Amino acid sequence: MAPRNQKPHLARVDAATPESGLFKVRPKSASRLKAEEFSTVVRPKDGPPIEVKYATPYALDDVDLRIYLAAVGLCAQEPDKVNKKSKDPTQKTLWDKFLPTHEALDSNGAYARTTSYALASAAGLGWGKNVPTRVTESLEKMSHVFSTWRIGSRVMSGARMISYAHDEESAELAIGISPLFAQAILGNAKRYIKVSLEEMRTLKHPAASVVHLVMSSRLAMYKNTKKRDLSISIDVLAETVYGPPSSPKQKRDRRASIQKAFEELDAMKGWHVLYNPETGKVNFTRNTPRSLEYMLKNVERIERELNEKEPDAEE
View 1 (tube, helix red, strand yellow):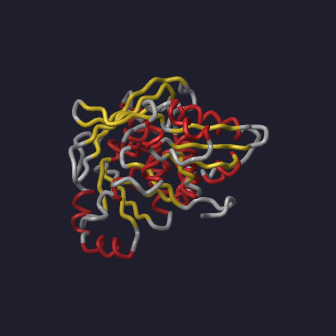
View 2: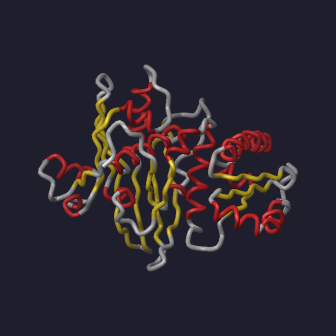
View 3: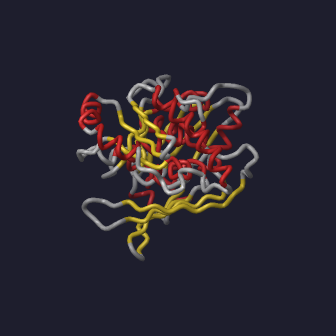
């Protein structure tokens, strides 16, 4: 078990969350209350596809993402299990507030008692008088996120993302991750994504955190294959980060903005990012000795992908 004052290094999240579109870069003028629903599909090797749906009454942004990943990392440090063996009667019924009746008695959640200062520090946020309130706002929004997992017409399970208790005056904070999301944290999930919190904390540009999560997920999917890099259209990636553009001008502005995120990732140890503005293609490679050797062997293919022009790249 890691010391309480040590920042977590990794966050293990379920495979669906990075691809859901739940967390985006939002304009400062955006309304806080915005009902949204997102769907993605997880394709297990040993079973039928699982449709994962997220519903939220609030718009979640890049800061909420950092706080969520930091919360997951802290729960992984001290993964007290909320289950039928718990001696605390409040923990036995904690999840019954947002799970089918008595499901909490047969499922494990992850729970951590910490402080808002430790959470903000783990998220790479500066500390100030408004930070405790910002932490509460993020946790409140995420406590309203509801997720259902479905195979065909059969709903497997459903749960809210987190629960929490936060005293802004003393900074005391308790976080609970529901059993559905805690499977990755507790190591019970068949598929999960590792996100480096050390890398995330070095990122400053709002888009960089979302790009980092999405590309960590997509490159992780190739860990058991020979493919160790990914080429993608800048416009496709920008829509994942910001949402659909409302005009050609906004599309161009987003291209310019997200390139700053590319620069941050490329400057970070462990990543190599190539962008061709003429074709609108960007290539991501994780800089391990094995992947660098792979990249050198596949330089012609990577250059070919970067030079393949998108139909609307001239806009």
